Length: 161
Picture 1 (cartoon, helix red, strand yellow):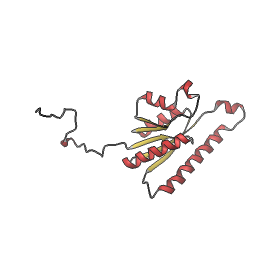
Picture 2: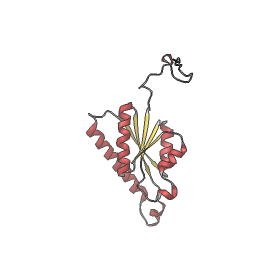
Picture 3: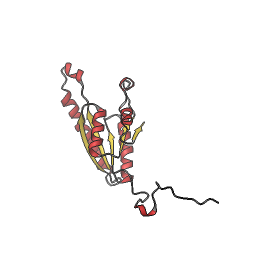
Picture 4: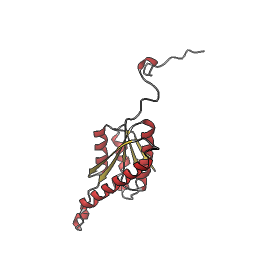
């Protein structure tokens, strides 16, 4: 019978590696109020709870160039959306605080959703990014945020349907 040998690259008992303790410390999830983003947030919250990681929820206020042409106060509307999302998150966190002990923070950014999420992930040194599957039809023309995050190749990306 052949003797088994541990490869040089494999962690040994003396390396300080301990199964179950080396996991993500920051999990970032993109939210926009859609059902898919709330499912992604729930999934990310479960990951954060199990890994004792910080859950960073990021809402990117989109630029709506055409809305300004129609006289809409875009900044006020998107700021109101961010405030509403923050309120919903706070309410949910209060309801489940005794069940799930998850550390979390809520951030807002402005501009392109991909750039906002990527910038926040870099800033927070995120170990993983979670997003909901796109519910928009136009993403096939410009590429979904999820595809762009995956192509960036800087973090593991999970897309929740």
